[in-house]
Image (tube, rainbow, N blue to C red; front, side, top):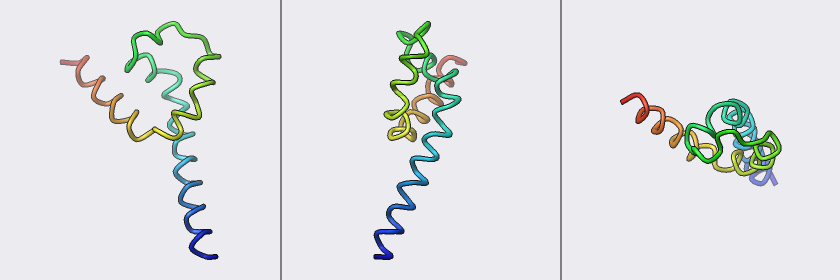
Length: 72
């Protein structure tokens, strides 16, 4: 029972980190990594929040890489 509780706490913390990441990503990051999302509506950005929460480490890496490429 304790093992299940620990796993659920880890998953909850992971998703919480994803939600915290999603806020700045919705404002700025989505247009940096995907030029097609430039000018997209807030409805679209709200719809992709669950996916951003799950894949936030991958999206953070992609966002950082895209930012470096634009500076070069």
